[in-house]
Length: 323
Ligand code: MEV
Image (cartoon, rainbow, N blue to C red; front, side, top):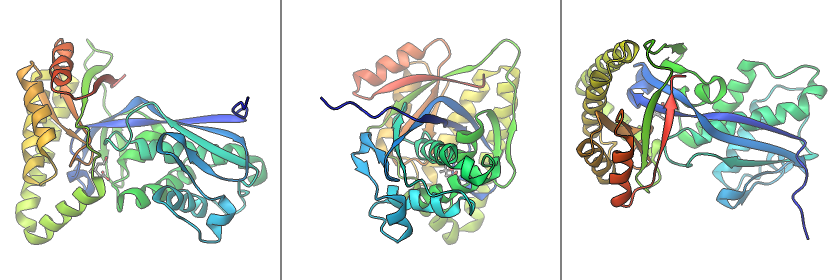
């Protein structure tokens, strides 16, 4: 009987949900977002420097092979990018394997790739810190995780790996980081329903599509980003006052803007319609779009929203943000 090798260490990082502002955040508009308690976990076991993701049936070449230039998948390219971005002096992890698992749907716009990247960097740090003579700093972890995110997503805003690393809830602004927001005193968190289209999100493709629209008509797309910025501001102030009706309206309006940016899809629209019919105050796509997940705000009606989605064949779960 074969048993799994005992773990030497386990590291983890958070997933995330964007309430408003995805895509516009790439162009400098703040996004209202929060970390999820679910995310990715990486176990360190004795091995030869490979990263494996059993849920994806993927195992990469060793770190030594990757250094020699053998990257056969985007997972391997992301792992190689992390190894290249880590500080000189951190020993190559030749005597360990890294086994990743997720506690949220992957490829769904919920930040699983960033959570994997941060947890992996932390795991490489755990086994290499002694050789380096000090722990990896926060900015070294961020730089290596960003290198992996660039492999997965092109030129990301940095929102996903910032929340994966630090957690929190608030307004993320590209180049500035997360400005935390507190909820009104009556509430310790906000409950959200997440519904899955059943289709993989297409962050890279949708970000490229928005860039194409931007090139075609910069003025019109800028005006749309300005409207999204105003919605984000309205939503941030509403959530601080506990005005969930205004927050929900802002989410619905943001979804309309996102659809005009060509980042929605029929399943997203169906999930949003079903959620609103079942009593949600607001519903929109979250993350890259083109598939992936929607987020619905339905205080006291969460069970109705999830039941409506389930009847239509969509999987869902509930999360809390802001605590
Ligand atoms: C990805 O979670 C959200 C996008 O805004 C891309 C990014 O911020 O890098 C679509």
